[in-house]
Amino acid sequence: MRQTPSAESVRFALEFLVLTAARTGEVLGAQWTELDIANGTWTVPAARMKGHRDHRVPLSQPALQLLAECRERWPNGEFVFPGRDGIGPLSNMALLMLMRRLGHEEVPHGLRSSFRDWAAENRKDRDLAEAALAHALPDRTEAAYRRSDLFEARRGLMEEWAEFVGGTE
Image (cartoon, rainbow, N blue to C red; front, side, top):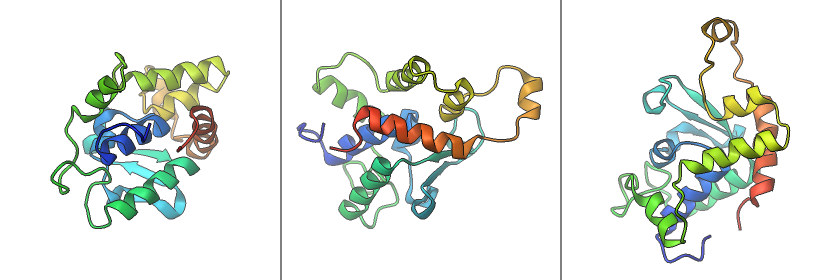
């Protein structure tokens, strides 16, 4: 993927999106202050989440390696994946345009569906997969009683997913 004639930041962002199964906006807006590299955690603040609640993402080893490369390339920026100006985030269309240039008709959001299909086809726990995607529980009663975000269990799931997609090249 990194051999494409696109800006490095866009390529890294698309790879991070795949590795984390995150939404496009979450990845594009990712800031260094949201990352706890030592503990392998990315906490997306509620203000940037569709469900309006913080979402902790366990970072696989390939995701952490990718972030280390980003930090080397853009050591002083606020955003993990800086836009053309090097200061603000990437454009909302950046990932879609990269996928088009790679010859894909699919959209970046569809990569989340790929993660969900992989989890189902490989008999991964449904609750883990749904938590990884930050989907809200449809049953309000069940949601009221579920206090765990299954974070440590999701860590293993995301490592397996990273292995499946090939991690970083």
